[in-house]
Length: 294
Length: 247
Image 1 (cartoon, each protein chain N blue to C red):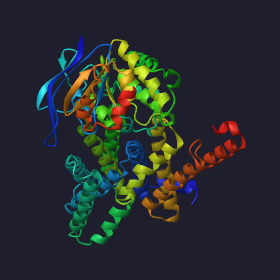
Image 2: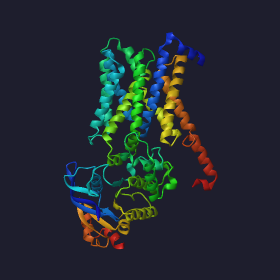
Image 3: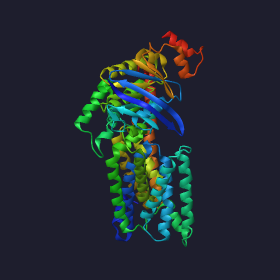
Image 4: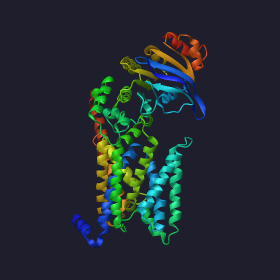
């Protein structure tokens, strides 16, 4: 399918779900790119994974009682994030074990709940792998508002998030409320996941959070640039992914993630300073001239 | 006059006593070394001075005020491995994070903040590397960055936790000189260290600690080997005592 056909389809009123899905996918990718930068730099990808799974029982309950999926997912995700933060205060268990306990439990709860809904197999697949149809109009506003709120909070607390990532002990010594900042960051991750889950699916949403930020990290040593490049990569990949998925009738979540992965691999190979090719040439150059090897 | 006063401080960690009845004063202009075996409570004492631990008894007074996180005139330099060196951030921005606590939410750094950062980098002689990503620095340079971050708040007391660990001798010597000159600029500097030779050479006074203070004094005053045997729990033939004799 040519790009012109894709644009025609986007403008076709009978396919009104398509521009909605595109808008939501791009908006959520941008938000995930920014929040994912913190996740990648703090090495808390596992928490992202946990939260992604933890929103599932909330989605399931909302689905069974026909409530709003975003609200349901948010409540479940935030609850799990807070539980993890509180239980992590016990030094006997490491945080990753606590997360391992809670996120599987949450996912299990979700499966039990959704099995109570008649004909659940189809909707289960939709939750897990994403879908571009059946997004209500109101979700556009909810995702837009939630996205703006997430980015706004990240902007206000950016300095503090950087400080607790660099050195928690020093952050405490400066009088920062490290525990509460952790909770706020977990909640932001949860919200970013929840607004993305519908199009990309529960299993794959982690890629939206991690891959663009990890790609951006390969490309730059400057935090500001990284947090601008990550959402750009995420947004562009969502656009390309949706186009490819619509053209070849591929599942949308999987296609977007594969596009993201391709960009990541390209960066891994061709990044200007830290890429494999650049390293190869630096090594050869320094092997050729002894004084450069120092 | 003393700017840091610890009086009869007792701290419990996990229900066990970590510090018992510790009293210690540090004056402006002096470099004091805190020396003792592993588990003697050196880091616990520093953390208590920062106000990060709640003591059972006793108090810490900094510049006439009870110590509180973010309020006291204290600069803290944690052990180097506490810091995320892989973070994509430049030297000057790390030093700027030292001022996070006083900047207010959502505020960008102002001119005064940059002046303080520039001064701190001058003090540790790292101004020419201010735009370098921290991941590319050597061990000694990293230690200087952490010191500069602590100096960004212009504190009257500087606390250093094991600043020499993992550094070679020339680097240690340069850092010792730096710490001494920082003390002479009218600050009180208290550092923990395992490097006895360096401590004896560079510090004005030493405090021997093992749960409580065993002795405090100038290196010359602490010649008596029994003090060191008590502190470290070693016998008369310990190589540790021979190092002391040698220096």
